[in-house]
Amino acid sequence: MKIVILGCGRMGSTMATRLSREGQDVTVIDQEPDAFRRLKDYGGRTVLGNGLDPDVLRRAGIEQADAFVAVTNGDNRNITSVQIAKEIFRVPKVLARIYDPMRAAAYDQLGIPTLCTTMIGAGLMVDFLLGRQWGDVSQYCEIPAD
Image (cartoon, rainbow, N blue to C red; front, side):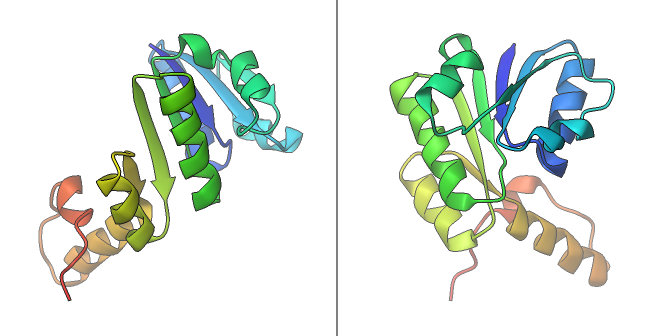
């Protein structure tokens, strides 16, 4: 599988390393050259540049990608890049990490796959504190009703 990851922070570098070790064809994009130092035992490619720039995405191989994941620190950047990958480059599988639960729900309703790490982390911690068994990830992604 050819996977392009935008963002080489803790999440992006961990995903890239794991996927690379599993034999996937991985390319990581980041604007900061120092970010790539996080990649240990990584056999994939790196591309320096802005992941919202179509030329940078092309250099990363977006036109042949099976999947695109955006895990930068910015919700707007993640959503925008995923929309570009999905709508312009027709990448079959896209996912944006989102911190803001309300935004995650809104984008999900628009058909943009998101994963809200804030809600997942909070749900796991609450279950731990209350002595409950951890649930399925999808349980933690639901916005509680008011």
